Amino acid sequence: MDPVVIPILVAALVVVFLVAATVRIVPQARRYNIERFGRYRRTLQPGLNFVLPVADRVNTKLDVREQVYSSDPKPVITEDNLVVNIDTVLYYQITDPRAAAYEVADYLHAIDQLTVTTLRNVIGSMDLEGTLTSREEINARLRAVLDDATGKWGIRVNRVEIKAIDPPNTIKEAMEKQMRAERDKRAAILHAEGERQAKILTAEGTKQKDILEAQGTQQAMILRADGESKAVELVFQAVHRNNADAKVLAYKYLETLPHLAGSDNNTFWVIPGELTEAIRTVTSAFGDQSSGTGSPPSAERADAAAGDVADSDKDGVGAPEIEPNSTLALDAVAAADEAAKEAAAAVSDAKAEAEAAGETRLPGR
View 1: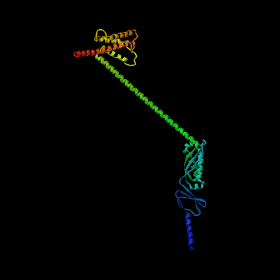
View 2 (view 1 turned 135 degrees about the horizontal axis):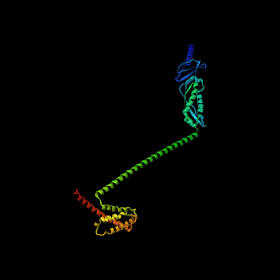
View 3 (view 1 turned 90 degrees about the horizontal axis):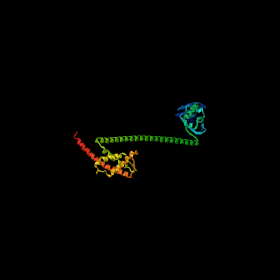
View 4 (view 1 turned 120 degrees about the vertical axis):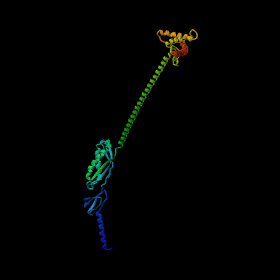
């Protein structure tokens, strides 16, 4: 080998080494702290940078993007002396690479310990229920303390979140029982409220039903009474218009007597005191149409019964009660039947006489 080539090769290697030691390429979102002879010199920014070989060296390489740090669950004692394990999540970002490298030896460990102490201070002033329901307040207080303490370290704490709060198992069981009792209570209240509403609605419906039924009954009674009044009025008008005499009235009176005993539950009959007058009217009115001059046996028995009734009326006792199986009752019934037959014949004769009289009066008009 030529002796001149060796020095050239050595010189080339030295140049390559010097160039490699001089040029520093920093990736995006990275920061390099440069020390010159052991003293901080500057922080390299992303891109192509030049340093003095041998004299300058890279001390720390930092990532300035937002970082996520999840700590292990830490035991914390509440105000009511219960131990709970709290797991936190920390979101931070390096804002000053020099301070992060030279102001604190291990910023992650420092942040973790500061988080634990702050949590114990905050949780120590709350009971278990307040701890479980005040996550936002705990997060805000943690962030304020950490941001104030880590500012001089060149770190900004963006968010602090409590990931989990784990009470002891006995407390969990007690909480589950409490929640179950609370749910049962709400279910019972809702069920009772539903039954109350149902009863109220049922009562309202029954009330409306009774009112409507009463109104319907009232209207039906009014209409029935109106119809009966109109019927009676028509009957009276017909009687007065046809000029009915005592024969027809006596017949109608006797016609209703058999209905007094029409029911099967009747054990005795009460013959009114006016029966004698009715029988006398009928017998006197239709006496001329009867066969023979003397009264029939049934009429004589009716007169005898009527005489007894009249005597009892004179004594002030009133209409006597006649037993159904007595002889007087049978005679009265027979007399009433005979009088009814005679009244029917009299009515037919009266109608014929009325028609004849009407035909006689028509020409005079």
